[in-house]
Length: 101
Image (tube, rainbow, N blue to C red; front, side, top):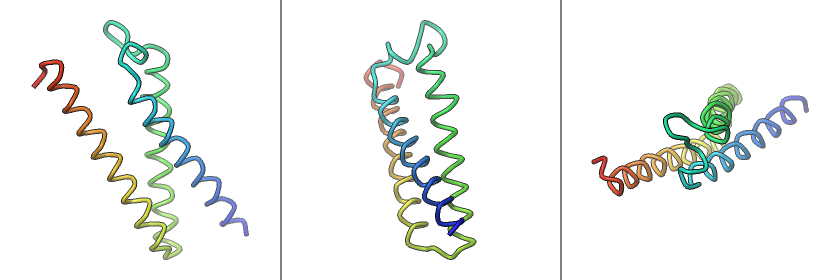
């Protein structure tokens, strides 16, 4: 029972921080970046949301491997990789649009 509650809360943290991180990354750069450094929303995104969803992913990955929970492991890993690919593609798109590439 204790492990199930822990996984359920950690799953919530993972998906919630992932969704908030995606929303923050899709905001116009004027909301997340100042002139040379991130503003407060940018610091929250970079310093809190991204590390939170990465740490919770690896924590859940370890728990899934330990408990031999293949279905959740594969689903979460595919979601993680999909979001990572989307982030990279969006970064290239913005770099090409602004003339960085």
